[in-house]
Every structure is written in C-alpha cells, then in structure tokens.
Amino acid sequence: MALVGIARLASQSELLEAKRNVQYFEIPARSILNRTKPNMPFQWTINPYRGCEFGCKYCYARYTHEFMEMDAYEFEDRIYAKSAAAHLLRQELRRIDRRERIALGTATDPYQPAERRYGRTRSILEVFAKERGRFLGITTKSDLVTRDVDVLQQIARANVLGVHITITTLDEKLARLLEPRAPRPGLRLEAVRKLSEAGICVSVFPNPIMPGLTDGERQLDRLAKAARDAGAQSFEGGPLFLMPSAQKVFLPFLEREFPKLAPRYRETFAKSAFLGREYKDILRERVQRVRDRYGLMSGPVEYRPEVWVEEQSELFALQ
Image (tube, rainbow, N blue to C red; front, side, top):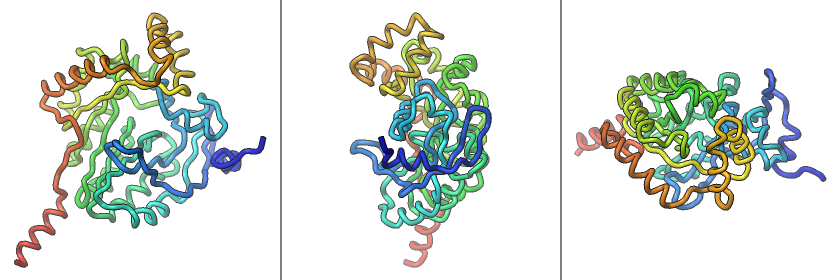
C-alpha cells in the first residue's frame, strides 16, 4: 500500500544522525503552530520534534508515530526535527491574535537530546524574543532549558512567559523506570532553581499522576515542598490517561515491574483512556491540600511584563 501524507514525508526524510538505537531525521513541515480543541487552557501548540527520546512509558503522544505507519515503540528511537521551524513561526504569528495563548512542548519535549544538535527550540524562542504582548508557556522534563536563560529573559520582558518543569516523582529509582532517558529529578529541581533565580516564572507539574505509583499524599507533599524550596510559584497536576498506543507500552511495563498493579490498570483502562470522575475529584482535593500547604498557585503566573510597564509609564508621562 502506498504511503500518503505524513507517513510518506517520514519515509522520505533525510537521516541527520544516528546514535546507538536512536536515529534522527529532518521532516518537512507545512506549519509549526497547531490549533487546539475548544476548552483547552491555550489556543495554539508548538512541537519542534516528532517523537521523544526520553521514552516515558506512559507517554500519550506515541499515537503520533502511528500516523507515520510506525510502531508505538519507535516513538523514542526515530526522532524527526521539523524543518524551517523559525521561518514558519514568523509567518504564522502574523495571523495570530496576541491575546491567544501558545504552548510549546505539549506532545514531545522541546529540550530532548535532539535539541542539543539541531537547536529548533532555540530558534523558535529567538522569534518570540522579538515579539511583544504574547502569552507563551513551555513544558519540559529537561534541565537543558537553562541553556536558554538569556533568550527566556528577553521574552519575559515583553511577553507573559511561564516555564513548567515536569517532575513526576522525586524517587530517582522510580523515575528511571518510568522515564528511562529523561534527566533525573534532582537535575530538574536545579533547573527550577536556576530559572527562578533568573527571574523566570516557573511551575512544577507532577504529571501524569499515576494511581498506586505517584499519587500518594506523602509523595505529592514532598514534591510540592521541594518545588517551593527551589523557587517554583505554582504546582498543578493531572491524572494519567492512557491512549491505546500508550497502553501497548505501559501495561506490559507494569506487568514486568509492578505486577500487582497491572490487573487493576488493565481493568480500569479497558473501556476508556481516562480515569473516573470519583478518582479525579479525590486527586484534585489532594493536590489542592499540598499546594495550599506550601503557598503555591494553581495555574500559570500572570504578570505585567517589564516592557508593558515601561510603555504604560511613557504613555502617562505624555498626558
């Protein structure tokens, strides 16, 4: 059967580099901004890469490789860097209302190892550094984000910027099982500290919160305290959801590493990718308690960027 659409583009992509079991390709992109569904907290997303080398066992975005006629397990081994990302962004931002929110790194990590080689995320941030009045959020598990403190500070002066560091657990052994190629939790906490000291609004996401693995109140309390101590201003987490593609990886993983939990998970996710309302309500209250305990906010920090304040002051001076 002939390949079409994104599958055809993937099959024709030029191999950029390979290391061990990971191969890097460049893939043509028609656009870099993607419109979200209604009721999302942001209206646009940017993912500079297809696939993610961190190999998180629970990753919902594995289904995106299935669009390219690939197996879910290839998601962390075949990484595609989108071409002309900065050029596309400059063109597309002209048509985007400045009040609409843009999220970078919603499906694949913008600071995964490929970024050290290809700098697609850095090139995108350099575009935003020349913008004013934008609302941008960045989500990552990587301490590589601190490499870009200089450009993040530029963005934050004239736009509302929030950086969200995902720390699923402080247990390094568990983190290595769940997120085998991601930076260890201690490095992520240090990234929170460095960003905070640089004046960047930073949050910690304990996502996804997994029943029987990371959802205990004591675990969440310890993480929230560490986030606060490192300089995070907000802490918000949501429960695990398992797309069918993610179930292909996560459920066998549970059977190997946590066999007592596997039957419960199989039964829970047999009919839906989402956990039930009762569990979600209990978890929401639990997260709220630990957040309140450490004076953390529940969402992105809203602030008036320095340049906005300067412009307002200049306006009043002229009156």
